[in-house]
Every structure is written in C-alpha cells, then in structure tokens.
Amino acid sequence: QVQFVESGGGLVQAGGSLRLSCAASGSTFSGDAMAWYRQVPGKQRELVAAISSSGGLTRYADSVKGRFTISRDNAKNTVYLQMNSLKPEDTAVYYCNADQTVRLYDVWGQGTQVTVSS
Image 1: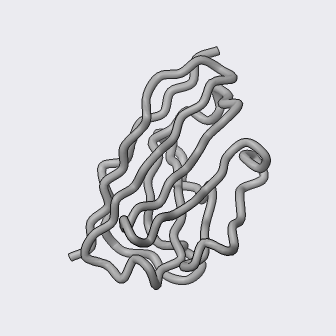
Image 2 (image 1 turned 180 degrees about the vertical axis):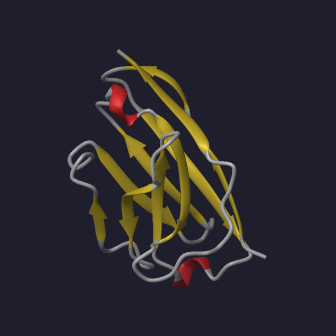
C-alpha cells in the first residue's frame, strides 16, 4: 500500500521561504515521476511542480515559476519542494503524489499546511 507523508509546512511572512518534504513508501518511487499539488478549500487541487523519475526534468505551474524548486532523493524515497519569495496566494494544503500526467495513486497523505501572511 502506497503511503505519502508530507511535512515542513508552517506560517511564514510574505517573502519568506519554506522547504517541504514528502516521504513515500510502498511504491516504486524511483520509477515514478512525482509531483507536488496544493489545494485551497472550495477549489480543485492543482499541480504545482513535477519532476521526472531520474530528477532530470522538472516543470512548474506558471504561478510558481522562478520561486519554487522541486527535487528528489531516490535513495531516501523523498521528494522536496523549496519555496522562496512566498506570497499570500501560496497559502494552501500541499500534497505529493505521482505526476498526474503519467499516473496518480488513489491515496493521499494528510498534506502539510502552508500559510503565508501579508
């Protein structure tokens, strides 16, 4: 059974930084393209950043390009999201899962709350 455990969220002022981590288990992590998603109450979950299985390719939502960086450590079955220059509109619960353009596991972790104050 695949499991994702997200951590690293918190309350930060606008312009600040956070680094999120997602530990995966029960999946073929090193063979999966992975992604970070975020969701605001009442809105659909959106893909924020994705990374190929090897880590060589990344892509980002236009709203976070130049501010967020996704990376992974296949030896640790962990994917990261470095978030810089945070804005209030980045406030959301952040989740990780496989890259939805390839596959999406039907289980989600508890997510990690990111709150950016103005």
